[in-house]
Structure formats: C-alpha cells, structure tokens
Image 1 (tube, rainbow, N blue to C red):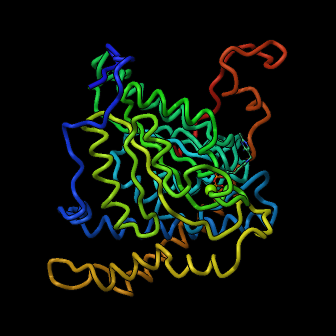
Image 2 (tube, helix red, strand yellow):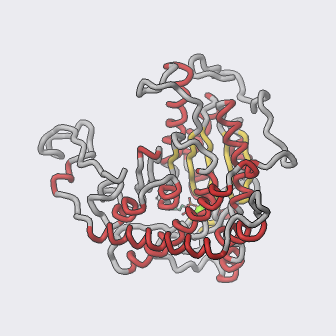
Image 3 (cartoon, protein in one colour):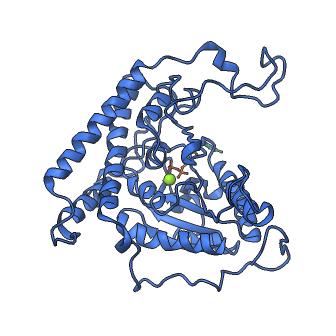
Length: 390
Ligand SMILES: Cc1ncc(C[n+]2csc(CCOP(=O)(O)OP(=O)(O)O)c2C)c(N)n1
Ligand SMILES: [Mg+2]
C-alpha cells in the first residue's frame, strides 16, 4: 500500500488486491438497511423536493438574490451517497448544493436563511445559495467555481489519512479513523485542470476520496458528449490516474446504494480513491434564468416518468415488506410524511423571513486571516457571531 509516511512516488498505483469488490450477485447492501432508514431516505428526498419548490417561489418573489441552482430530479444522488457514509466523513460539493446540505442534516431554517442573506444562515448570510457550509455535519461547502471543490475534497481525505498514518491521532486529540471523503462535481467540471491535478495526487498517494460526477447530461446548455471526451465511459479519465471507476444509476436510490455502499467500504478499508459516473437528471433549468432551448420537453418528461421519489415511495408501499409480511409504508403514513415535511419547509421560510439581516460589523468578520489595514478596521481576524442552528 502507498503510505503517506513513505510515499512510493515512483511505483505505479494499482487497484488494491486485498479486498475485492463484492460481485453484483452477492448480498445487496440495502438488505441490511432497517425499514425506518429507508423511510428516512424518502423523507429526505421529499424534503429536498419541497424545499426547492419553495426556494423557487421565494426567488421569484425576489426574496432570494444572486445565483440559485435547484436540485430537483437529482435528490437520490445526494441522499443515497450520503447514506453510505459515516456522519464524520467529510464532503464537498459544487454550487447546486442545497440537497447535499439537507441530506447531511443541516437545519432547513439555516439553509433557507442563508439564501435570504440573513444573519441566521449557515454562513451568516454571506455565502448565499452556492455556499452552504456546515462544519458540525462535515459539509465543507458549496463552491461556485466549477471544479474548485475537487482539490479541497482531496485535501480533506489527505488530512484524514495523515492523521491515521503519520500523526496517529486526530487533530482534536481523539483517535484517528479510517475516513473517506466525497467530492461531488458536475459533468461540466470534468475538463477542469484542478480536477486532474487532484486525481493525479489521489492516485499517486492512495488518497481515500471518491469523486462523484453527478452526471445530469448537461453543463449549462452543453450536452456532455459535446463538451468532454470519452463521455460514453468517463471511468477512462480516472483509469489514467490508477483510480477505480464505477458507473452507477442515480435515479433508483436502492440500486444506487447497493452499488455505492460497497465502494465506500472498499475505499475506507483500503484507503484508496475512486471515481463514480453517477447518472442523474435535473428537471429544471441550469439556474433560475435558463430558457432551456438545448433540450426537448419530451426528454424531460421521460426522466420525470422515472422519478426517484415516486419510485422509492412505490417500492416501500408495495414491494418492500417488513417482518409481518406487510409493506413497510402505508399510503396514510406517506401522506403524513408529506404533511410534516411541508410544515417543516414552511417553518424554514418563516424563520428566514423573520430573521435579521447581518450586522454591518459582520462585513469584517470571517473573511481574512491576516487582513490588510485597508480591508479591516481592526486588522485582526475575527470570528463572527455563532449560528445556534449549527
Ligand atoms: C471556473 C468556472 N468556469 C465557468 C463557470 C460558469 N459556470 C457555472 S456553472 C457552469 C456549468 C457547470 O455544469 P456542471 O458541472 O455539469 O454542473 P450542473 O450545473 O449540471 O450541476 C459553468 C460553466 C464557473 N462558475 N466557474
Ligand atoms: Mg451537469
């Protein structure tokens, strides 16, 4: 194994021979998932859908400013991949980030208030839609520069491996653990140099990061096969760096989990990187201002017919049976779940509406570690007020 303490920079990195990936015919990872957890997945996906619907309304009412990219259609990818992690595995993502924040457990009020530019937002209203950040839940952004998060995700995994192999303890004094970090990116980030530099180092040093391409087929209005090489098999890009690649269906959360959970376990156990082409689709435009001339309504409808929330709801109400032989979710329970989520999102909107705007003094907090005198009156690094929701 390539170790950080003594990197073997000259030897080629080969996929680990110690722990083979389970075959498709073996036991399914989802068989070990308790019924209540699967209902929780449904709730989280529905929460993201409802949250985004209300976000769109608030944006149209000009309560949210700046750029805003909705996740509708892609819910299973965040919920299914995060379900395969430990709560303290770090993640980073791009600007289509509300879904990841909610799936990671961010309070919907802190998420909505951030978009409203309010002091109670997760980044105190200074980041907006593209910069969701939740350190207690190990979410390290929300990043607006295409591909910029991929070296950060690699660095987070490097740090965890450094604690494990070199420091032999965590920076906070606790026990070092085998961790995996997830670096989500859009298919449009596949051509960014930062990603390739990061993948090269991940391959070279066996850094346990998983690059998850949320492949929704378009980078703004450019179809993937017009924008990048090897679009039919993106794993080839990772193969060049000695990184294991997988193609996973991101529309069915059970299939996704069955394929992704063993991959996470393999990366954790062997402390190796991986790359996933996660096939998904966004129902709405790239951002709130997109006339969508690059695709047909029929194409969008084809994907809506395979909606991941409808599929999981049907699965839980019809196919998946509990120990008593009955389906694990009744129609009535699904209705109650929707009612509860709608109320939670309404609360988040009310919370955002009624929260104060940031204090003027917050202009100079949380910004520069070594501020220049002309940029900060105090010339000292200051933490701003702490958000009690995080
Ligand atoms: C370095 C950089 N170049 C260009 C942009 C403008 N831009 C914002 S989103 C985007 C397309 C990205 O598409 P993709 O990665 O597929 O993500 P998706 O929007 O589909 O989730 C571009 C070109 C940017 N933010 N950063
Ligand atoms: Mg895309």
